[in-house]
Length: 248
Length: 281
Image (tube, rainbow over the protein chains, first blue to last red):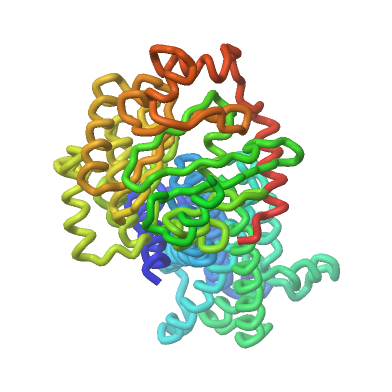
């Protein structure tokens, strides 16, 4: 447990010390909220969808968690480059615990980032349906964060250069994000695209957040929870497996 | 005779030999990096493991420190087998790698503290031990500075202190003085000798500076092409080769050819293959 704690703490310290990282990673969600929220807002309302910022904000919160969590995998590459990975690999700590500590650290950072985006969206005009359900939203945010953190780490285990990692991650993240229902409703999509959305784990996260924040879930919070928990566990197991084979 | 001695060492860990390597071989896809080597290190001694680039030094160290598994051979580190009890072995050694392995975004103190927690050093011991070691390597006054602002020599000193934090019985130093100026090199060897005398920690090191090995090591093994060419005290090595310095003895044993390390792309390919094959630990 102490090993998991110390690896978690290390990531939080590194995050809290990098102001540039905190502020820089808020730029993109803010841009999406402002540009899309105000840009598409009138059209969305005209089409009878209601207030677009209300619809968009949960999606952008999920997006910021998706990006922060998946990219946290790059820290494995940094640790490899700066040699710290060797220090961890010769320590008397099992590879699984290292993986758990890393994932929880990265996931905590991603959730913090999601919370900041939530407050930013309040400034843009987002009004959650109920404040009492916010702790429940944190549960789903954590599931999304753990899921994509584990994915990022798993990928980082067998990619050695930073550029390659960024390309692959972008290639994965962009469709995951665009086809998750974060930006537009998924109900009336063509069948093929709808299928992709159905197998996209982020779609369940977005659905749950929307369900909690604006009472707009249509898959059901229980289904969402089961899918997210299963995929997160599977990716954790996969990440642990890959991490246990890492060589320095 | 030697086999008999090894058995003793395996059965009784705190007897004479703290590291015993018997008939160790490591193959990578048809390439033999370490070829049936056998050597022993006595508890409390300073042991130098020398050899040209690509001779098999790093592979041997990686196997002893549980980062690689051997193809065949019998190993014992402080009475434990790195293959079957990696965690027991990891607890008994400290290591300073050839390249830095510090977290540069953390302070010197945090690097020490986190290491202590990873190795289960109880809080009180940890606090005392960190102050003691950082004082010895003259970094106590810089403990709250970020490591990224440290010079190469300071990082090395911090890594030596960190490697000793959990009271290991063996300290591995892989080219600890590489790239440092003569003053710092001298200082570092003084710390190492002091810590060896004070704590009785066994020191296993590699270096390309023969005069350092001659000055510091009690016993030396020279490895080349994956085989141990010779082992003994510096004087024995010079006598055997009829030379007057260890440098000459080294050249007499390993020849004058310049070695090149494996090309990078091949090394990468190997890493990738090893990754996909896995080690199953």
